[in-house]
Length: 396
Ligand SMILES: Nc1ncnc2c1ncn2[C@@H]1O[C@H](COP(=O)(O)OP(=O)(O)OP(=O)(O)O)[C@@H](O)[C@H]1O
Ligand SMILES: [Mg+2]
Image (cartoon, rainbow, N blue to C red; front, top):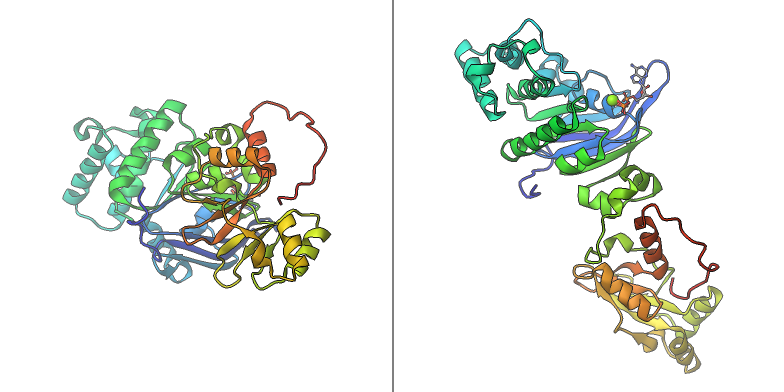
C-alpha cells in the first residue's frame, strides 16, 4: 500500500503508555507507537504480551495507568468515553451480534445511537452488504442464527464501518474461522481498505495474516514494541533472535540471491579519521589484530576508503597520514547490491565490504561471518556442522 497516501499526525499515537491492572499485572510497559492516518498496523506477539490491552486503551475500554494516547489529534482522556466508542469501530473474535436483531439492525447499532433516520440507515446497510458481496435483498432481514461463521464476521466488520469511523480496532477478528474463510475475509479487508483508507489497528496471532494485510507490523513483547516495520522489513531485517523466532525460520528461508544486502549490514569494528597519522592507526590495528580499517569523514560520514595493514605500515614508516594508504575500489552501494554480489566478492577475498549510500556515506559493512550466519538461518531443518574453529578474521 502506498505510503504517500498516508498522512501522519492524526492517526493513533501512544506515548510512554503503561497499564498496570489492579492485581499488579504490568500488561503494557512504556509502549510507544505512532500509527499514521489511513494505515493498517498489526499488533502481534506471544499470548499475554498486551495486545488486547493496548487495543482497549484506544477506545477507553481500559484506562492507561500512565502515558498518553492521542486519536485523531485528541487525547483520549479528554474525550467522553461513550462518544469516543461511537466514533471508533470495534471488531472482536466472537462477534456478539444481537441474536434478536436482523442483519441490517445489527449493522446499524451505532447509527441508531447517533440518531440517523430510518431511510439513511437502510441505505447504509444495503450499501455495506453490497460492498461485502452479500446481496441486500437476501441478507438484510436475516437473523444471526441464519448466517455462517464467515458471514457473521463480515457483518461484524460492516457494523464497525457503519457510522464511517476513521479508526477501527480489530482484535483477532478472523481468529475463529476456518483457514479458507479466514483468507477470504483477509482479502476482502485488503480490498476494502484500498478504497476506505481507515486507520486500522489489527491484533493477530497469525504472522501470515499480518504479512498479508498490514502496512506495518508491530511485534510486541512484555508490553512494549520490540520491532515495527513493513512486512518486508521485519522479514528481511529481524532485529534479534526473539523476532527471528517469532517470524519463523520457514519465512526467513524464503530468500534469494537477488535479495538486497540490507539484512547483512553490521557496524565495522572501528572507523579511522582522515586526519589520523598512519602510525596511530597502525597501532590500533595491531592492538586489535586487524588487517583492515575503514576511513570515514567524521562530519559527513562519507567513506574515503579502506586502509590495508601493509599499506598503513608503509605510510607509518614514511611518517605519513592514514589517507596515504587508502584503496577505494572495493565497495558496494546499498541501492543496487544483492546477496550474490556480496557472496562473490567475499569468496574472492575474505575482507569486509563497505556498503555505501548514494552519497558515498558508509552505512555499514558486510562480512563473511555475517553471510555465514544468514546462510545458517536459511538452511531450514539442517543442523550446522562444526565447521572448523573460530578464526579471527582481519576483516571485522
Ligand atoms: N482485567 C485484567 N486484570 C488483570 N490482568 C489482566 C487483565 N486483563 C489482562 N490481564 C493480563 O495482562 C496481560 C496482557 O493481557 P492481554 O489480554 O493484553 O494479552 P494479549 O496479548 O491480548 O494476549 P492473547 O494473545 O492471549 O489474547 C496478561 O498477563 C493478562 O493476564
Ligand atoms: Mg488478546
